[in-house]
Length: 152
Image (cartoon, rainbow, N blue to C red; front, side):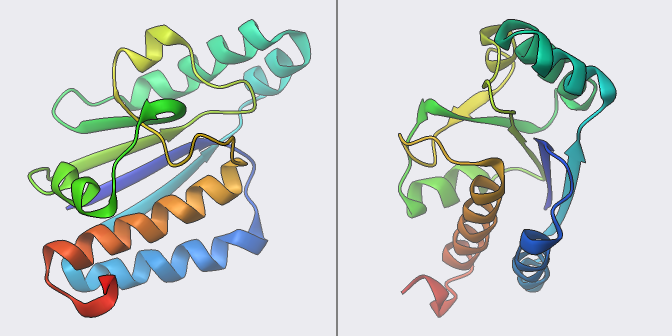
């Protein structure tokens, strides 16, 4: 399984080591996780302009990565909540899973319609924390699917 995590973010070394550690652990379950931090100048400029422009810029940054044959999942506080077992079964049948984590202003409804939505929490999380929680839950999901004892 290939899992791609796209986020509107600048690279952050402090959290990167933990994300990489969890990603490495996923390899034992034949899963590869790739992280893509996107923060083009257009996003930077739009965030200074307005929340609406910022959301549009996030869509423009993410749109080239939408893959119609993949399970595309956008993280949003208004998304569907899953427990760890349900989340594992959501991922299970897919060879390519892509996650999209928006910037400070969230994601446009038009982009959300291109994806399934997922909520890690009804609270707003920084992209750094959201990525870390997501990586841990991916590892947990793969553990569940492989009957690995980590989940217990």
